[in-house]
Each structure stands twice: as C-alpha cells, then as structure tokens.
Length: 389
Image (cartoon, rainbow, N blue to C red; front, side, top):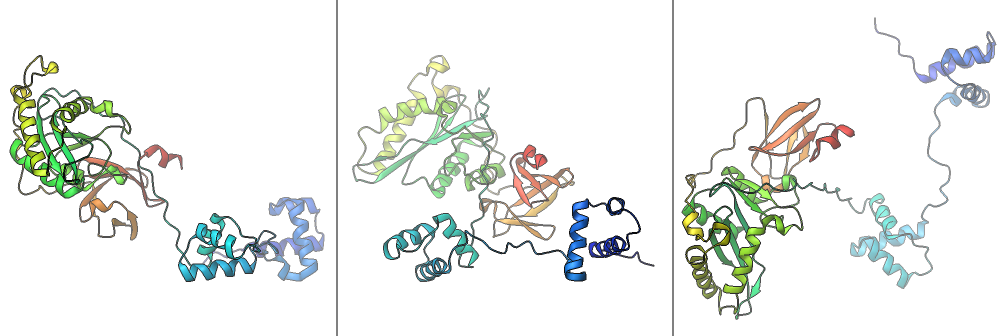
C-alpha cells in the first residue's frame, strides 16, 4: 500500500481546523506544526478572508514595477532592432538623435530588453584559461628543449612584410630553422616544422610564447600546431605572458639575427631567405659562442634519435579512462548532454579519468587539459575552484 502524500496545503487546512476549534493554545499548535506564531496567524487570517483558496501560495510577481521600461521605449527598441539589427549602444545613439523625448535606459538595459523580446541571443560567457606557470628550462643535452618564435615582421624592398620563423636547440644554441614566411598562419609554420623534424628528428619539448599559432586562449591553451606536437610526443612549453626573459637565449639570438641579416632588407622573400640561410650557417659553424666556452653551436649539437614518423601514432588511453570523441561542434557528449571542449580538438579523442565524486580529469594524450565538473558540465582549469563551489 503506498504512503499517503501530505502536501503543504493539507497541513495548512489541518492547522486552521484545529485553530478554529481552539482545542489547545495557539502557541502549542504552532509548535506542533513547526511554524512561527506570525505564520500561523497569516494562514488563519487568509482562511477567514478567502476560504480554502487563501491557503494556496501567492504568486511572487510584484503588483507594480516602478522602474519598468515604458511601452514607447520598448517599441522604439523593437523597431530599430528589427529594421537594422543594431545592439544597445547603437540604438541608444539613434534615440538621442531622432527621439530625444524618450527616457532611454542604459545600453546594457537595452541589450537585456532585446533578449527579453526574443530578438537576440546572449553570448555564452567565455572561460578564462589559466596559464600553467613559469616553464622549466636548463636542458642537459641537445633536443631536450627546442625554442621557437617569430622575429618581429619587417618590410622587404617590395613593400611586402616578412615574418622570420626561428627554431633553436636551447642546449647547444644551434639554429635549426630561420624561415622567411609571408604570415604567422598555421599552414606555413606547420610546413616549416615538418621539414625541420624530417631533417633533425624530434625534440622532447618545444618552448614558445602564448601567441598564435603556438598557443591559444582555449582549453589547455592548445592550438592546431601544439595538438600535432603532442601527437608526436612533443611537450608544448609556454612562457608566461609578457616574460621574454623566460626565453632569453632565443631573444639574444634574435638580436644577432636582426643586426646581421635583416638590415638592409632584401628585394624579395626568396632573396631574404638566401640571406637567412647564409646567416644561419655562419651562426652555427663560424661564430664562437660565449655560453659554449667559445665552441660553435654546430660542434655541440647532435641529431635527435627520435625520427619523424610519416604516419602519426594513434592516441591511446589507459583502460580505466572514459574516452570521448570531440565532434564537429567542438564538444562531446557526457550523460547524453553536451560539454564544450575546443575547436582544435575536432575529431580527436580525449580521455577522462575519475578522481572524485562527479569530477573527472580531462586529458589529450598525456597532457592534462582540466577537470570536468558533472554538476555544471564545464571543464575548469583549477580543481580547487570546482571543490569550492
């Protein structure tokens, strides 16, 4: 036999019935039902005024809103939103010119009215990704850490910009690449690194700043380039923002490059590349280096024993991990719900390791990206922030 369900209204009816019969004192009756005397009198007075209907909960909507935007203002906002698709700031500026008699609210309030009228969609607040902190350095052998960066762009005699991409072995100071590119976009950088990997082999880590295409502000600060590095078994290391001293050896090499190979600029990108090649040979095999005790970088550097694989290895995870594929909508399904991840991980597999009740560590290959909180279906950088909520 099922249990009888007692609703709050049933309790109020029983309370009022006993109160009207005066079988006990009002204070004892309130104590028995677990309400204050003020609340008890409220329900009794409502019953006397309205009957059983008065025992229902009253709506919490206020009867009047003194600060409510007037209809004329809403009509003006609706008109220009539908006509031009403008946002709050633009509509406010228009009202000041053509309808100064209207008491317009702030631009933020206009934005909210647009959303309330169903004429716009609020943007999802972007999560700020934490920086992993100061990078480790001081490699003990060649190919432990390579460093990379762009030496600031400069104009060639043709008027076109040149973007020198540089790659250096941090231990030996050997410059592996100085490539004259026409932009900092992914494709050109990818091709340059692929050539370097094929010639010299793979390092264990590559240190860079936080700029594109080496990093992003997304999940794990991953970029398309760093995703490729991770799949090759290369750890991306990021310097802290506005901290060029954390890549000091590379910055010092850039000073020499600028002084010796970019002034004066050449007539074309091809001519500038020839000058870069000449400079790189001189830097590696002719110019003694103080940090190396007067040796040339080419005397210290050794080719990596890790060859570049023409077929990228498949990312695998331990058996106790839950594995999910990031779809074309930049997220994955978790308990039949959508969890946003990152566009650079599209069609890649990520692994989730249980670490607490409803909390999972999220990995791409061996790199920890953050922590999934099942309560909010969002990946956070800071485990402490999840446990505080």
